[in-house]
Image (cartoon, rainbow, N blue to C red; front, side, top):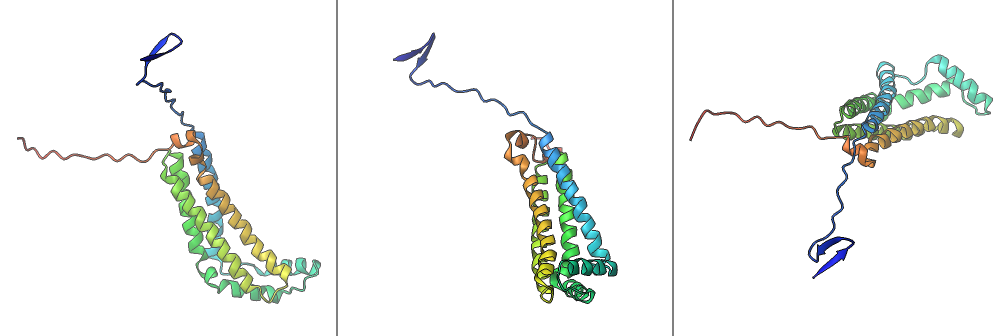
Length: 207
């Protein structure tokens, strides 16, 4: 028995199969992601340099300026209060290892950007790892900042902690950008796993 579809005769055991349309790779998606990761790496790299080369957050001029700004906002904050906050925060667990955390994040973000420029899917993993380290480091920094600012008015404590939350949001943006190529079929098609060439050694033996 057979069914007739227009002028095409089909057997009952046959079925129409839609042709598979290949997805055209869009190399601009991983390229844009790579640029974002490299820009993030430049930002974190600057923070890494500051963390490694300086032991304190604020210079004396910064402390004077901040004290004046808080005073204008009706917050009783002296330069000595800021010096104590700076000293306590620098001696905190986060203050001792933040340079290493930022360095690890920078390396991963750079690696992710370079790999994605080359169309290597491993760049997503590297970039996401760098962004995750950046997010975790700044959330940790916000927590230790609150502990070091217990002697400061609430507005000052909140101001310092907010800076780290903003940096954590930057890390979240990098994390979202790192996985962006996987959200689009054309982006996934533009990425490949590195090929592994297996060299077969000729032993010279013949059967």
